[in-house]
Image 1 (cartoon, rainbow over the protein chains, first blue to last red):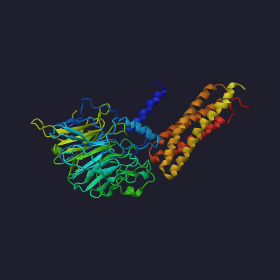
Image 2: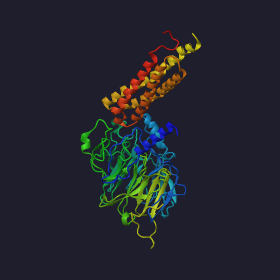
Image 3: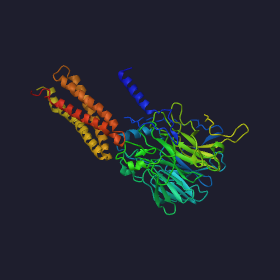
Image 4: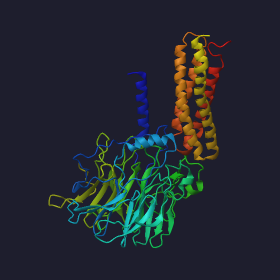
Length: 447
Length: 144
């Protein structure tokens, strides 16, 4: 071995050692362990090489089955079940922030290696599976020519779609399989640069208010704080008038919003900042409290100051709230759905499913699964449990990457969008038999 | 005057000067934009620094190759110590510049900070030193 080879190997090991997490730290739940800040000259980047599923499927706990409900999407992200049971799948990819620094050029190229090479769909596809056999009888392009649609909500005869630049409203008749009339703009959404372009959407329990999650325009303000006006916020939009107000701020990238069924409170999954270590900062699940400031960019997990942000803002940091529940660092939570109407029963009757797209900023990959967070009385009540797994091979290659999740209480199924294999997965309980005991969350996932 | 020394005088020496001018000016400019960033926290200054450092590394790489070739071709001829010193300055400048490029890839204040500023000062000083060493003695074949 030449000296230079030894050098390269030593450097790689050093970087790898810097980029892996300490498995002893507990990074989930209401009080995650937070290590000290660890900045490295080269951020640890590990991209799981996409290889697809072949004949395989993700794994689910004993007592459940998983099948591919439909494939060949053009980057499926979020989903919505309409009142008649039709399933909508929003497809597309937005963003396209220009490279400002040499780093943007290089990191952009590397991250691209872990994503699908399919072109953005910019559309919503409808699936109809009236007989609930897992095979849709009807598949149609429901709405075409959208602009990176992501969040969707249905209220009272109207479908609301959050494009990356505007909230649109479409009038909808039950049974419709295609809408050709152009959408009516409810309100424009912040779209300049659009570093985090996804606009998540949920309707309040009474249907009067639409909540939109708007992500930050940078990791921690490195494009300048002037670009962060009305970014990293959740908006509440009056459905009747289109008037909007800002409900929560400093909430870095609220990628999915949902209403908790017991309390009717708004909850969000939020992606936190990168490049201060493999175990900082945990992404989180939180109730979105009125008027709350969640720290970004000045601090994380309450008042832990991020030294990269100048000028600092001690007044804001002092009133930064601590999120409710950590999901783990860099897991990239992108999907959130609460079970309603008893869920899958047993230990699965109250809680949330969360789709974790998976990490790039640590050597020990995290996320790449769908977890279950049990709730009691409208609050998280236990450790997260892997529900859909097997997205990674033992060699750390990616078969798929989960995004949006939606629970359909009528058919008692969970749907998971996978934007790497461009598939929608359907998870259903196996029919109960005498030899099949009640399904419980602590049952180990089977491959 | 022979052909070789004419070539050196008319083409190679000015070309070397031009190549060396890039790391000298770009590293110095990056030092200035670093100071501007640390004084104002205006992000655009550190963006300028990042690109200036990359440019300095590209031309600094050419200067480094030049210094290596000059040292190799000039073995046993007068001025060997100066050429070695020049190579050392350029090599150290380039390595510290590479570290500085990674440092400037960190986000916001971490892209400069005390360490980035120190690296920028060292790179600018080493570039200037390399220029001084290279041009403080007459070109080969010139009248002494």
